[in-house]
Length: 408
Image (cartoon, one colour):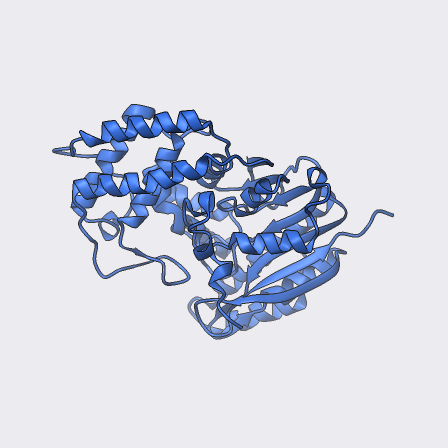
């Protein structure tokens, strides 16, 4: 089994809108297309198809579906991702984009670096991410965009400037993406002001060009908790990738974007949002596990046995980790239960999920989810390994598929 980088974000980088902003981890457009082809959703009667992604991340499923003229509804609990997905799936007017590029290009030429005190987002240990010189440059650009065009919103074309700025923040940082979660290089790199301006324009121009290609399908993006979503209509196909039970926090991964663009103002806010998300472990999300109790009495015996082994494996944190794993699958059970009433007869669901390991004991995510699907009366349940992950041995990503029973 290979690592299959073509099933990861690396495949998306040079594919228009799909390469605008990285989310670690993320799956590729190639995988979504293969699922669509397997399920024969095109070319026949594509307008009748309704696709759902209840854990939409950066809208990979939605934008691919829209490229084929399909209708897709996306949900995410993170307001930054909801904002980003709305801009990523928006159709723009070419003339407006050309005027935006011309104005930004002219204004940025004479833009001077801020002197004296400058604004910084309230990120803890921000100096770990950027050098002081780079921070001054980023703050100057932040002030420039805010003064000229305003804060991010959900409609205006200028939001592309904010996406380019977010990408610039990561590309000038000491973040290292060679691991399953963001880590840091040994030191930050100082970027001169002129170089930062050039990098910003080098990011923005290809982004603007790719935004000129219209998406023929319709994408609806909504903010909501995937466990108890108020879905609009019934869906034929679900293609999604929830968080994995591996303590990777999406809030931790996204916090530089969220702080710089004003979606977070404190660590307390980050913790509250992560507690609401499935698999969240940031800040108070960890401390609250000690008082959490599960809602479902039908969780698979294999899961409960695994949690018991994890609890007994470490006297200090074993119980906490066992509770974390149990809560993850308890939340997923609620989600899969709620989902059933929003599926068309014979609908197919496709979940990209990974297994995990605690103290040397594996959490067999695919087997546990398949057992939950069986308990909830899904049919045609299957799982296949799609790639080996770039991490510890025996960690894989699976495509778990099932159907919803036909109407009586």
